[in-house]
Length: 328
Image 1 (cartoon, one colour):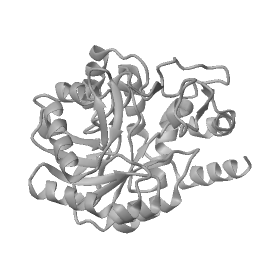
Image 2: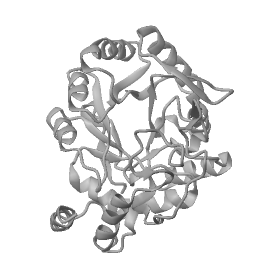
Image 3: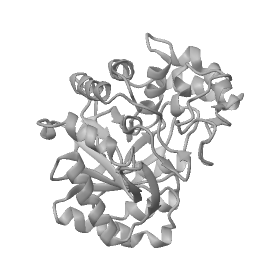
Image 4: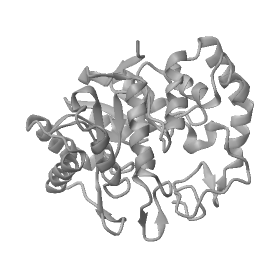
């Protein structure tokens, strides 16, 4: 039986592991800064999504901006004929040129949100979105109520079932938490990078804590060294955005690599691989968490889904990890 969790107070049951679909969007940019994960093989992406379904995954998270629409199109194609079996989350805010794969701006005006929703429905080849998320980490909290109310209107119209905000800031998340159909906050969270205020808020309001970056953008796979260099069209490469903290100047951040090595033995114990242990930490962190590791290959999907067989870490393992991190 697949390990499942609830999508917050929506009550929608989903697999405890989701698939993050950023990387399968392929390359895209803003003013010369790469925002994607490099070139991607669409056929491999389709096979990987099918493999995730075979292994019990029912939750898929994307955004309209990933590959400037390409991720949504690939996901829609892969899930054709399977819509009732899956739960789809996507995001809005960016304005982009699909042909040039260029992000040109952002808008959360009500008319833009409604149009973005229609565009995502078309690309995903569906007539409803299960979870529609505001994709602006630092949008001012005091200006967010109109965004929330527009999303409530989309619920009433039957376009979306629930909504959330992808933000790492407690005050932003709290504004959305007041909304009747808010079901989730998506936050940066992994064993190297905790966010207690948001996790506590999700527990308080019974919201799903959807974990982007659950493997620290690859560092928790254990495959990176101080000399590893991602490609020039990779968001982690030399021209990475200012917010990139796991990689600096096109190389893995040595401070985070040091923590990975300190935790490697315990995370990779009890038959788990290192990334499986990192996902298990997230499940043990809170009953609200739903990690969404990214993927580009069938092999990555298989390894990540293998974590479902083991479930969360034990309380003793969690305490040992906390002790190790306090020494760093």
